[in-house]
Image (cartoon, rainbow, N blue to C red; front, side):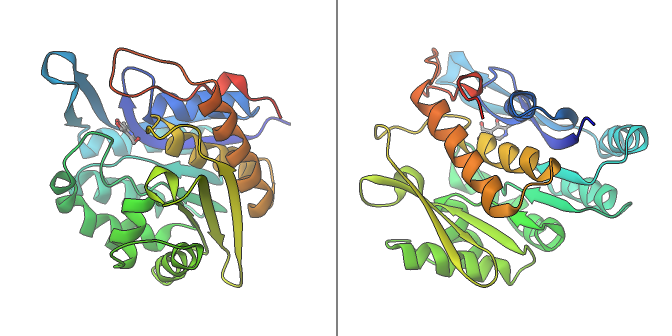
Length: 266
Ligand code: PXL
């Protein structure tokens, strides 16, 4: 029987991040993708690819969620970029309208190329209203520092400590992604499951950020959980898919290459 996975995320028109990546990832992993748009990001090629950001009106978010959640019995959702406190309110309200097995939160605070300050107004709302509802969170280095209150993550123990601190704010499972910012030759992700840390490590592929890696990881975890996988297997599959997708990355006229989800077969 077909399994359903649902994303609540922003559009990134080049296809390198956000909603577009989530649906590609769902399709590649064999689940039926559904989605609600929270915002529209249009990079500006005339202004160094700066972010142009337009939030979707809260009523329209409500209507999309009502349509999706009425059309199927959905128990697994991924939450990506929300970007505005009003959006966060609308999504939190929609999430509370039913029960869930898996709420996977990619706590997007800033996008690649954005100034950190741009995130501060949504940070508090995300922490107060969405993080407590999440069952899984997938912060990157910067997000893990912000959400854990730690200033730097230098060791695997630091990644674990950040995961533990974030888990006290709601999610049962926290995957802290070291990425390019974590020192050393390896791209290390740590899953804190409430009892122990599991380390997922692959050699870094280059020293440049690749767009869509975080979205792909969280969407792949979501797809695997929707299929009934256990969290450890879901993270393993997701890490493999991201590694394969970065190796097969697609170059663009934007400042970042992007992950190619189509390169991965399970
Ligand atoms: O990669 C984070 C991200 C998520 N969602 C949307 C984005 C970005 C980064 O650009 O635009 C819509």
